[in-house]
Image (cartoon, rainbow, N blue to C red; front, side, top):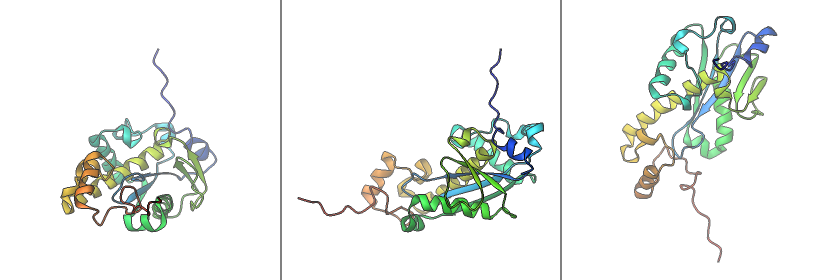
Length: 217
């Protein structure tokens, strides 16, 4: 007997049944790295897919961290060219992250991504904890990127967009190895910072880049 697959429209379905046809999944990529922007995406999937299921091109859609780079690129291409899917992508750069903190920067990116969906959707499904300043009513879902297809699609757009940006930054600042670690605090990256100092896309308020206060004796 085969195990029953989880219903990854379980959060969208009740909203669709209430007549809320446009439900946006919202997710981000890049909260933890020491360099580069935080990127957020918002995606609205067609409500008719609750009955028809996902198109074959999206078979296996999941949390972007659970996918290979090739799978993410394939899904990204379909989501952004399908025509039936609405999407918005936004980013907040390292300088703004340093100015307002990473949590506020993440929430700003989410709102900016939602703002690209016009008109604004009546409801959003957000990965993780509730976002107090979100511009639309929301349902926050812990591990939502693995439980909702809408959030999973947003997860893919945010991750692929950010990874491509970090490859561009690698070409500008090759000595930091951004192509390999995408700005996360790997041993390779920390060694490069120790050797070369920070570059313009580093988050200066993140340890180990944050200036140490005077030691108390």
